[in-house]
Length: 267
Image (cartoon, rainbow, N blue to C red; front, side):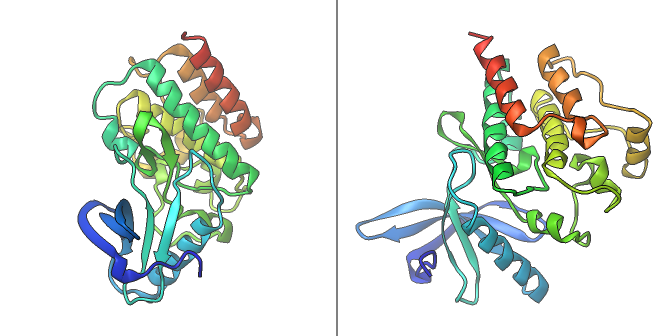
């Protein structure tokens, strides 16, 4: 109840983005003497199953806890006909759009470090995100990055596969659907793909490879080559994240140290 907001004090404005099942608006929440700019996620359509999933996602986010590199929830509306999730609004939107212009190597390391810090926090809370990608990282003031969109997190735990899964971002063990347990190391694989997106300024991973061929190629040892814009140190970290055996990949705690050392080494 402490998270429930008065629907009459919420105003939806322009659309910021559309996903498979939701729409995100810029909006305002009236607070005593002033109003606050926020992001408001709504659900597409009236499918009862999608509604249940959206309510589950809201509950999931309300119970994550606070961290400077995880998107903060302001509240929700669950008793009205239109269910809403209200979060902080970040200045630059998602990282995918932000990357469409050139970025300095140091800036990319700092952004990678922020994501690693957020993921280290989630891992300590025993949360597997399930969809780490540039489209789900938001960029705010001072280029602070925050992890968002926990719509797939519950599906990872339940072993559900009916939802649209971003195949080229997920780990091979998730592609194999239950043959190998899913752990936070699966998010580490996706973090490697996020680094690839960052250094290529938003290119999707595994260009030119069909989805049906991807798992076999990975099993055979194929890994993406180093992009011309990528420094050796960042590519080395990518390759560590892309170890086929999940237990040979680094932990997010180790990645936090590695990204921190890279930033310090550039001073």
